[in-house]
Amino acid sequence: MCSKGRFQVSVFRLLNFLTPETLNQSENKMKTKETTPLPQGMHIVAKPIGPLCNLNCTYCFYLEKQALFPKGEEYRMSDGVLAAYIKKYIHFQPTPEVEFVWQGGEPTLLGLDFFKRVVDLQKPFAHRKTIKNSLQTNGTLLTDRWCEFLKRHHFMVGISLDGPKEIHDHYRRDRGGAGTFDNVMKGLKLLQKHDVEYNVMACVARETAYKPIDVYHFFKEEGVEFIQLFPIIERMADSKEEASGLRLAGPASLDKYEANSRVTEWSVEPGKYGDFLIAIFDEWIRNDVGKTFVMNFEWAMNAWIGSPSPVCIFARQCGRSLVLEHSGDIYSCDHSVYPDYKLGNILEDNPLEMIDKSIAKGFGVSKETALPRQCLECKVLNACRGGCPKHRFAKTYYDEPGLHYLCDGYRKFFLHIRKYLHAMAQLLENGFPASDVMMAFNGPLVIQKGK
Image (cartoon, rainbow, N blue to C red; front, side, top):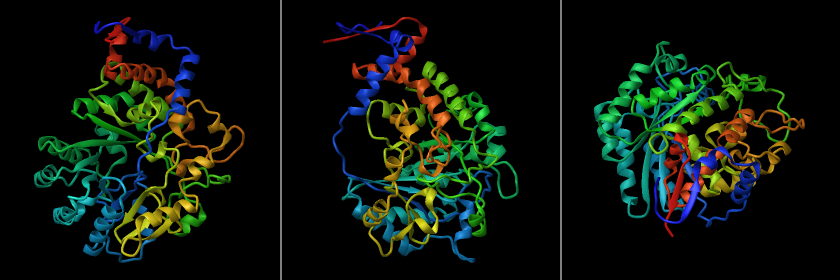
């Protein structure tokens, strides 16, 4: 017992005897909570090497984008495009912080000199904004020199690792068909050795979803503290897309039926993705709150307390996260690098004007305005917000278009965790760490708080 005065709250009771009425009261508070408006920032993810990669992962949706570029294309961002991107992104960003995210393809194929150039070009603007850099990598090309550089310049690194060897190598293979686990683990160990700030992006494909505890225990055993569990969903291309050299479908149409709802054999099953998250959450809530940080759970907690979503997929609307290709071309979204979604070019255009143009056409806004009736009536709408528009190609039980493919899984997960989120929110409101929720599993717990 922690005794600090008169106020008492029983976390055990919150966890085990919450009524639907109590939960609905919390959800109503969440719906009506007002927050101080913040400047509408923008986010531009850069792909300086386009879709080129040294791996050939089964589920990658970006490798095939080579079909959209001319033959003989040089997939390397020029100094001119790089300089324009850095200057304009900083100049037009309305918020005090600018985060540069470098993706691919595999950005480390560009070599260290490219990123030294990045840092040099950013230095003249350091007095105007807080500048941060993030690098998403498969980890196979990391060396001591790379990690020394990343540490020295405070890069946050996202490394792609799906779990233990047999799980990871099932989908993540190199160009010769060999598994990549051993090389990725070398990269992870180097990041840890040099104390580089990092998190793990774990893709949850069909087979992976059947082994949640294996995945979670592996990450804990390897000392991973920050984890994101990303569901793999891809539709098969229709005849028009196949004619363009693509094997995967583009974004769904939210306001009309999608005749093509065939998903790939590696796409995660909706219910199994929900089960996967629940299994890991149940382990985490009992043992690891405050020690292991699963971003999916952090996002859910964020929604529960009424704060705007930090990720576009669970935000009310999207459309302010652009993608910059190596050529300087800018697209509406990472999932929308198709000719119909091209907004302009960084060499010629203003990024904020490109966003306004995109939103004026309905991109991102329709994420909210096109929600089907089933979503509007759903008890977990405030957590899900319809999900990513690209994957809203299913039908509702009212026979409407625009339902997210993972709806069953999302709903199962969010309903399962809401009583725990309620308990943690109560702890936080009363000045206690959310990790105190773990004590409730050892028996009745009364926490007292001072006046």
